[in-house]
Length: 198
Image (cartoon, rainbow, N blue to C red; front, side, top):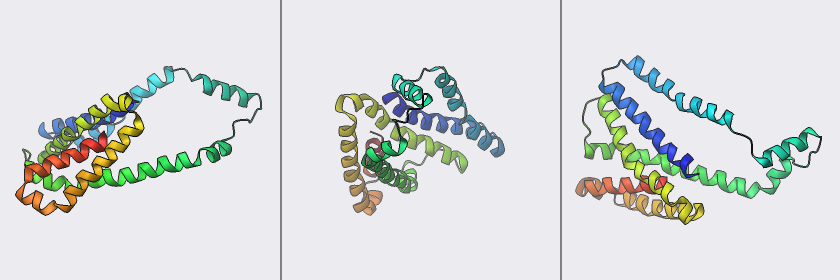
């Protein structure tokens, strides 16, 4: 589980590095967006090859054999009814998390104004994206380190409680932080990413 989760952070990092390399090397816009989009297919293609080499789990094999012999003991509608609250809780959890996580981008312009990344125009945006990814990467690493030690539920609760704390501070003290304590604002921004990825 930790490996799967950490690869999301590595994917963010790899995509940001590719964009920085392409933009700073002077590649045309046409080539840059096409290459970046096409490169996104490379890792899934490699993963697909390895997935095709894997054997199915014993549980899956049992169900497949039962279905082939005409046994409909494993019914999808019964399974959904049995786990309806689990499915609703998981889906609701991800919905709320995505709203908060992607809303974090609202602070990007302020943070980039404070950090002032090198370059102009597209170069500045690509460099800013790389900086943001580097800010959020430690949360992925900490999540991988602690997910099995603390447990998934405890890591999630710890992450959510800290997200409430740091987003609350960033929201209520927004003007003061941005103007009078800009580096503290960047640190709080980093903590929101750290705990959302933790």
